Image 1 (cartoon, rainbow, N blue to C red):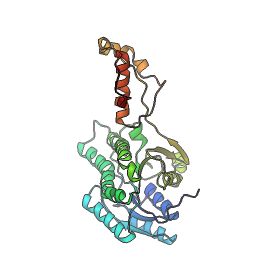
Image 2: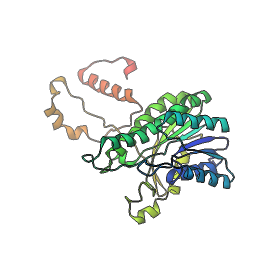
Image 3: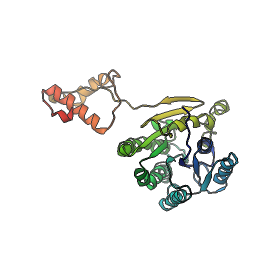
Image 4: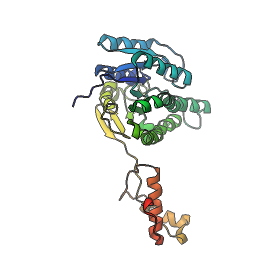
Length: 310
């Protein structure tokens, strides 16, 4: 199988430099028409310039591809809608949304100003929600859409000094989980990339030897597999240095307590059993957990539940 994007139109946010640039070039190299979105800000979100996005467009055109630049601020609904409208006017449709735009304002939580927390959450979370909202009905009507959000190991696992960034990146998982369910019957798939790459946002955090290995171009092939027609659905792909993995959220089997055992002392005494990995599973949705808890509680009490709860 050769993964191609001929006839597809992609919007890539934060595509002026680093990962976004690599992704835009990768999509174009395999036939996609690309909207290169970048506000041209510094890593902390200050300033703006269209030069970076326009430079990527020139690179794509030099390889024989088609692209357009748009400097929409992904947190501004009107600007994002204008970008989507211009893309549809020029290319006829949009098939792919790759949300990559982001900023950093790192500080320990005790020293962090709430404005810095809000700004980072706004860019990463709402900067993914707003483009998705602008395209959602378009995807539904066309019965086709491929979405990839960008999370981070800071959001999945935590990283000192990045409470704002970690919270915003963890939110990507919740957004994806729901949109997978709501988009399923419309052939809209949503996945997440969790990259570790040598970019402006990591160059001061990692030693040079690691930066040399973690080039953005080593990650792009993975994200292309999450965007093509036969892409998986609801996958969190970890990627870096040409290494790819799936990040999963498991729930342990759990322990059912009788009514007379429902006190914190009893629960604490069985914490090791509660946290046991034996029998752990991935929940396909929120009601799967509800059903599991209800079944276990009913079994302990000898209660027969209706079939629809099983």
